[in-house]
Image 1 (cartoon, rainbow, N blue to C red):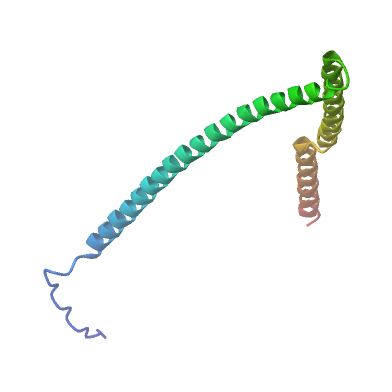
Image 2: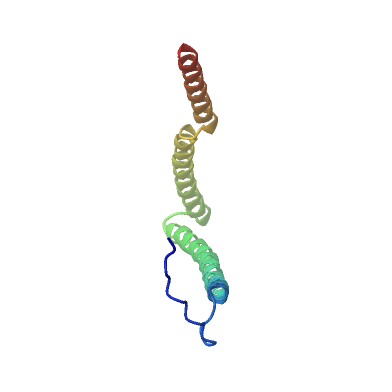
Length: 147
C-alpha cells in the first residue's frame, strides 16, 4: 500500500532556503544586540558626563557653604563683642559649636551601634541550610532502607 503523494513543486530561485532564513535571523539578532550595546554605551557615557558635572558643582557649593559658615560664625562673635570683649564672643561661639558637635557625635554613635546590631550573619543561614539538607538526606536514606 503505497500512498500517492503529490509531487513537490520545484523551488523558485527567489525563495530563500531554511538555512538562509536562519542565517538572516541570526544576523539580524546579532545586529540588534550590537546596536543595543552601542546605545547603552552612549547613554552611559552621557550620564557619566552629566553626573560628573553635577558632582563638581555640588563640591563647589559645599566649599562655598563652608566659607559662608565661617563668615557667619565670625559675624556672630563680633555681634556678641558689642556687649562683651571680643575674646568672650569667640569663646561663646566656640562653646556653642562644641555643644552642637557633641550632640551630633552622640546621635551618630547611637545610629552606628544600632546599625551594628542589625548586621546580617550569612554563616548562620548557611549552617541552618546545611543542617536541613543533612536531615533531609538522612530521612531519605532511612526511608530507602525501610523499603
